[in-house]
Amino acid sequence: MDEKKVLIQVKNLKRLIPLRARRIGGVRPTVHAVDGVTFDIYENETLALVGESGCGKSTLGRTLLKLAEPTDGAVFYCGQNIYELNEHDMRLMRRNLQMVFQDIGASLNPHMTIEQILMKPLQSFYPDMPNQEVRRRAKELLETVGLSPAEIYQLRYPHEFSGGQRQRIGIARAIALSPGFIVADEPVSALDVSVRGQILNLFNDLKHKMNLTYLFITHDMSVVRSIADRVAVMYLGRIVELADSDAFFENPLHPYAQAILSAMPIADPDLSRARQIIDLKGELPSPVNIPDGCRFRTRCQYAKEVCGKAEPELVDVGNGHFCACFYAKGRTTRSFGAVGDNVCTKEENK
Image (cartoon, rainbow, N blue to C red; front, side, top):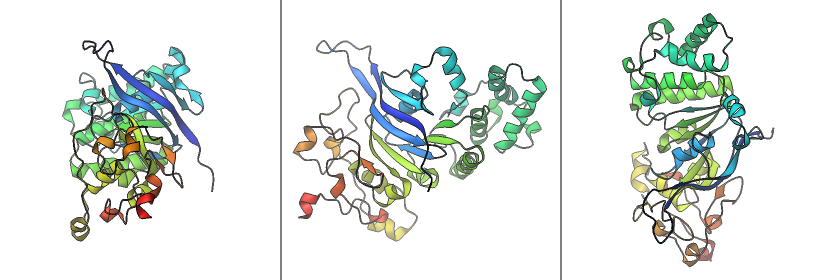
């Protein structure tokens, strides 16, 4: 089996946001939006990034593309640290790094036709391309994302389209320059259930046709299961679990990941009734005041004394399954349908 090629390397990435509020005890409050994240994304894979609202998923996606300035760390694309590029070289790099936004309506210029929106990136990066060729490419893009015949759509404005159609336009704009990597920030969260499947199928089709690589940000675990090759779970600015999709759904190791999966709807009514839903106690801590030690310990039913003294590192506990928990190696689950029923540590098994 061929070794996977690393396309994106993220090393100790941080995005700390100082607040304008009055200093408390002489220290200016700081939001730890992304706080020391390290992981790789392989070529032609879909890495799903999941977690609660406010955990830093979207900020991570934007910082990774340098749409938000990092506080520390590095991001490498094909071995090139994009944070070391000057303005000119970074602009050229943008051809390879694109984004599909969650609020697609706000990201499309309401004063431009769809044809003009799709022509803009081509005209910006290929100023010598004949206008006729640019129009042809814009028409091709519409047909590629399923808006065919293009003549019906190209002269319309964004407000004349449904949510699903606007999302297709956003995807067409993202692939206009044939990028290698796309961050998709909850691209189906605002769509009807009947349309979600179509958009997810479009993402998968484009991935294979254009050799695309995705960071797919979502909180919908059913979407994750249908599209992801690997899954990363984020909590309070840190990744707490990273694994292949099958391994993650069969045996989640981190208590937070188990809680997320326990709340996922199951089509089988017998399995749904049999499983135990893990009810997390308390609220998500503020990213301004991060708990000492393990960030999840204030809501974890398995927390012990050591969890408050040190923060667990994200380590490989076997077969490429990474987890940031002191007791991950001894934690198992019977099955996905009963996730969270049989959680214990090695010490408790003795």
